Length: 293
Image 1 (cartoon, rainbow, N blue to C red):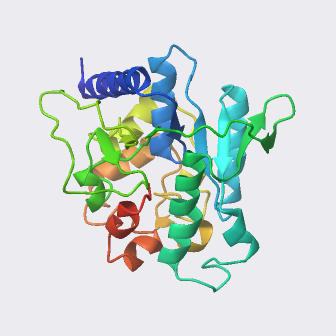
Image 2: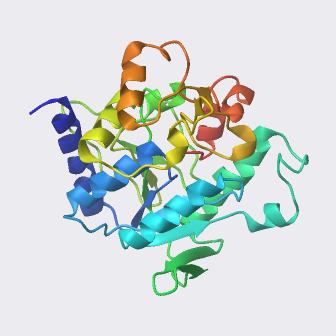
Image 3: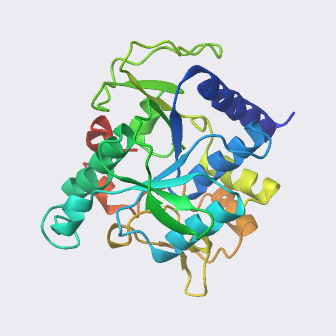
């Protein structure tokens, strides 16, 4: 069993434990490489079927190719695809692109608040109708008590403080100093009623591991990660007003792997193109304490 096999086995184990232990959970799908690998692992864990709803928080500022990719794959893989949004903030144009708030406030509103209220069922959810390929209001308003997320410890500083099974309070707030120990693959899964659980099956994966696994498994990934001829590609995907590509001529998965092995990005943070990280003091802890992914 090689290193990728061990990572895969651990992640599949976490996914199955989460499904067994927690009632009414969902999985966040940001459409990026990490959460798409997580989705692939879920298909493996449950023998080609994903019994967990996929939830996407749509800020309406995602790169259009991302939404097209999301819906194409949801139809192809017959996923229970749900999205939520902060419709009030969007209608009132209380966003960074509209010049009404700064980037951090925009993320808190369009992502953190939208996520919290989508998970709780307090705001409208929209679910894909596979007969038409369109989204319709979701009649299910039951609260998601846990959410599976594709974060990695090496991706960003605050994420290195996470656990595989990470408790949040009723408001989705994260107490970084009050996290359960996880030794020798012993995981705490019995939490007080009302605790919201974040589950992180990819915690020990690296950026290189993700791309090596994508290559090995031939996982379909959005073309935004590849150079389209202008010497640039996206390394991390987010909202288009706050996300910039990196200088790279990698046109396929193999070339990205070689680029990562070369050390070209050794001293450049993976999310260096995400402007909200810089506005949050170089990290995401302020946003993540309040519920951000």
